Length: 310
Image (cartoon, rainbow, N blue to C red; front, side, top):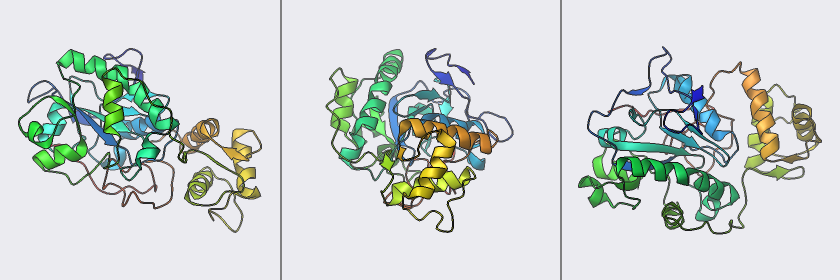
């Protein structure tokens, strides 16, 4: 883990196979990058998501052949593949070899409101200066391209979904039909971010709540060795859950937000001995089967599907 040669302000955590060899293609065999490509991780919004996914790439990605140039969340960006090399992110040769690929914390099934919550806007804001710098370096216009324009090799900004429609090789649809391209492109080209949407922020929950967010927290607590009693991960944020969380993060455990997540993430990394793990277990939600969209590195823990180099 070192400072990024491309962006000294970023951490560089190299994507590596389980044998320690690079998990990317050395060089740009088909020419310089043409596109900034947006993906999602299929992972719940959380501070630490970028680091977690970078560590997943760094420790062999569970034997899969997958990587990305950048991982992003609301408070950090990590570089995993240098810009002069080709990440294995798209599943087809044009996207891999001509893309600068970004993995964003979130799901393809998210609503527009969820993408535009405080977490999403903070993530977009953090990405903007890096994307602008890379685009200027390679002469990439900050314009969202159509499928026809991609097939004509027109440089610009695009998605995993659109590169799949243009060139085949993948059925992934990330970052999803509700991704707020208008807002994202406005921010890239100099506009200001809108105020956060008033929708539910799926990072946050508190004692008394029920549902899949609570159950996701409980699964992580169990992974950390917590005893939630006979009910286990029952999706109810009761006293047992509060006590277990509080014992790890050092507070009452009555509220689960970004600070608590960071402490819990550190504990889980300690329990796992620093090994890269796909992510905290979570509910099987509207995102569909893991690996269908994005990386599928988050919910639930077991990761299936492959993205291979082309």
